[in-house]
Length: 453
Ligand code: UD1
Ligand code: CA
Image 1 (cartoon, rainbow, N blue to C red):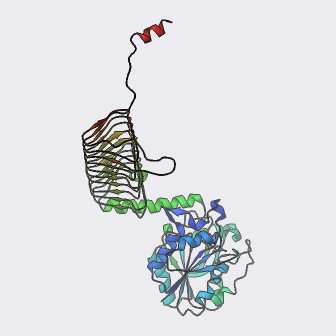
Image 2 (tube, rainbow, N blue to C red):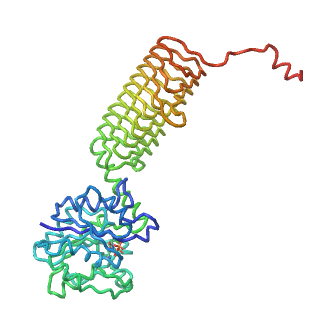
Image 3 (spheres, rainbow, N blue to C red):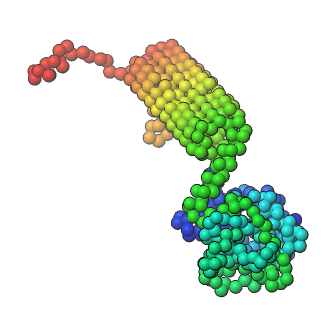
């Protein structure tokens, strides 16, 4: 049985952002959520998150997670941050894991390894990694297998800076932890209470400090935008590789963006530049064309989305297709065999099987019957400036180009609407509605005008 503390009170000055560092998103999820989920994977008896900078927003991000929250009013350093968790863990009898909210690639098994070392009798265990560029990290001082300390960059001599083994910021401690923390002083370049000073303090109390060497990638801490992008790239590469193993075809996979919440089936094809966000689900054999963006959208097996389409909260059935350049907004439902073409916008509308809207139309708050044909330029005028109204278009109806259907209005099954009509009254089944000025031809008028007549 162990406890876990995540340090997440820092501002993250180097990000140059109003957003607290631990809330910067990685694949649509705040960085801190990765640390929390990794901690939870090991079933801690208690999980305490130390918050401070941007507290309100950080608390929002923690909603729904079984965590306790400690508050660090002033950010006086990582040891001081950890001390704020003491009231929650004072009499906790087991070991405590400590990680940082800005180290999202750590794996539960690596942390398990740290706990094991404490279980085997070490007073403290920490994760170290070897980096080709150790800039910014604490450098590990060793004497053979013994770890003597970790020196922050700011306090390091050039010789120490040349050390490439660094402190990854993940630790396990025995219950001596909070007594040891009280011995940390802030006599250093940053005038901060450094957590890595516990290495020397544990040793001074005759306790063994174990260093567990890990993979460089796992230790990546996010202090800058560049590091954020690097970590996001690694998470993306892992995710893409996993989906390809499960049978997804990606053309130019490095150009495809997707979030962990997305679900894909075998034989899905993703063309270059595809962006898949939120609760998007794509069924077997479905295809997404180049530079399409799908968010919270469902593609049933065999559906097709063509290039540059943007869909949010839409459902597309098998045998239906949308795009190129289609815009599907929340509540757009395209049933089997529907075709929605370029520059067509659909919002909160149900398109029954076989509906065709090939170009340049707006269908909002509408229900369109099976097999109806929507001409170019057709608009459902659903908004009167105050309220939204519905339009019903019957089965097999034919709406001519550039017609405006002023809602609320109903076009009956099998009816036709003449091109350019402004329809303000219901159209009966099988009727033709024409609502536009009659054409008048003035013989010879154009010639007379040209000749100055
Ligand atoms: C820290 C370590 C460094 C290690 C590196 C690994 C210290 C002094 N240094 O440096 O040895 O190599 O992580 O990534 O521990 N935080 C608070 N309150 C504070 C200060 C920080 O909660 O007063 C939190 C931050 O939100 C962050 C974490 O602690 O999540 C680490 O702080 P940061 O300033 O990023 O430390 P580094 O300079 O990266
Ligand atoms: Ca850091």
